[in-house]
Length: 341
Image (cartoon, rainbow, N blue to C red; front, side, top):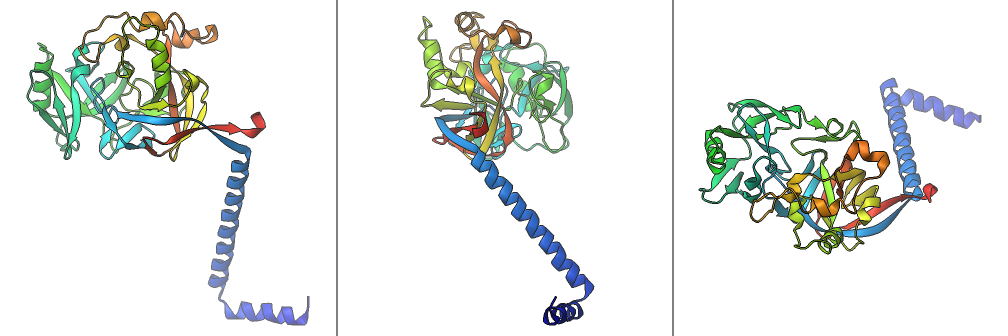
């Protein structure tokens, strides 16, 4: 080491107290970490290929489980599903007095209840009923109810006596019904894998059946309708993300996708139940179509019969790997790992 360099180092040590040298060292470590992260991200991007496979044609939020959806032009895709401000997918639930969920399976006329946003409230409309306004933020003095959704415990804050009377009257029930709201800050969500074993530990839901996101293509719907004597609607299947510009059932193979700034992981197909046989325009349940037709060509592989039983498959369940924002018109990209090609 030259005498000049030695003198320079000694001068620096004298000029900077130990604390300043520690700060400089820490900053250096931080810069190194940032540089390493940027290199890793660049390497990752070089190992991935994005292939456009479709376009988002509709985004649907179902605030109250089994009631009509709200169509939105953009939404945040979060761990628990689609959000539009305080409007959140399947965060409200109708329950019996003892807390058991009530859906269109038990009360088919639920599918006729329309939901819209009016200020900071949900506005509910049902045939023969006055409009009901339900605040999206409830007083903490409202009772928290213990509820059961597909045999699993979850809580919900009671939306009040007016809401209870409205639903009880609408269903002409001799027993009271209640509307409850899931509050993320104080309540624990359900784990998707408790409903369907193929889900991961990180996949969570409020009152959804099993998955935070269900995706379905328009072309799959067209294929089904070509086989039915009487065409039905996408509303029979209650998807969150509707896709256009793809082949029928192409979504079966989209295992890793980017939509907007979100990234979704396909977990499994959606096994269909009798709720799909409720006519969304009349509220009449047949327990036949479209299930009978779907069973003729959309059965699961024998290796997965323990998961799907006899349920036909239509639409795909996704977990949320990266939260983000989606818009109608966004391209959908399949993420392809180059080393797997």
